[in-house]
Image (cartoon, rainbow, N blue to C red):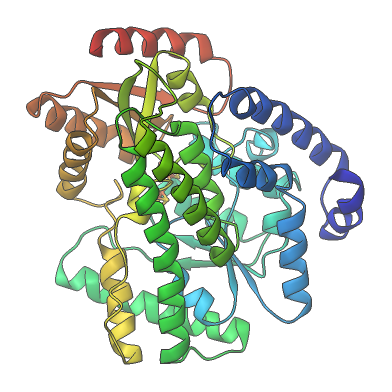
Length: 423
Ligand code: BJ8
């Protein structure tokens, strides 16, 4: 891929040598974790292709769209209402925040005890490693956890940043605040794109994003089969790619993959004979953060669900499509996003209920709670999650880690012991 895209990367201002090293490491990592799997679906070839072109083809598409006057908006959180962006004929992309590269640069302006996800996105920008952020006309931050909201202040010295205020509770006053924020965001996107959002455009955007969510819901239903027909790693990758691929094309490809998966389920074929079914829950795993799922699936278990923003938290709820006026559609968007059960909310009892329901519905033997080191919201909430699961008779293992490979052996020992116990 490198040769044909170098001029584009240079124009975007990337550090070409550092970027080449990043792609090399990523390619090797992907080969070890993904290409080594047996009995994969043919449909995963599309995902392999997307990954092999991770900073190539999609970036070229974005640049071509920008040349035609469309705007690109980057995000780090599932709270940013995509429907608004697409309705203004802009393009939304989830930005990379799942690798260690760039951390050294980030630590020059961030405390070391900052979660890896924040260090990653700041580092990617400072070290000029990510063509996605360089392609963005606007980066949208949000006031979720304290680390993120302060990091956006720092990021705004280096990129055009817009911050959405996210409520921390779910009372009527909080909904009113969120609605005001959605309307303010709509105006900002209209200003940036030069397009006004009409009821018809918003309806099309709502349907577009709902279709993608439905395809991922179908995938999640199919993977719940006995035996498990697709690895957790592959489903995580699909979820990760959903954040930056073209939504129409992605939905079509995932629907095709699901057709194949349906056949596999009908034939009773699995990918992990005798493996213990587990649910992963907690912090999001941004691309290319595959460390823990790989460890789990190399330790006699298989991941059958992700209770996270790169998982069911992002796909569980659809926007109600019955509205006909712009106001009704905006209200439907406000309501759908208020259902997100991020640990930044207090209280957040619905998350506990969702985890227990999911664990039961997926018939798992145990839950592995994943927290990024220094992430207080999820670390604090993990105690409540453990208690709720204990009451339901489901064992849980709490893991805290970052993106480095230093603790792999130690994590493996803990995960193996847990899997042995739940079997
Ligand atoms: S809606 S989970 S995507 S905020 S891991 S940066 S919380 S210290 S990512 Fe998230 Fe939106 Fe919530 Fe989802 Fe802070 Fe924790 Fe780091 Fe985190």
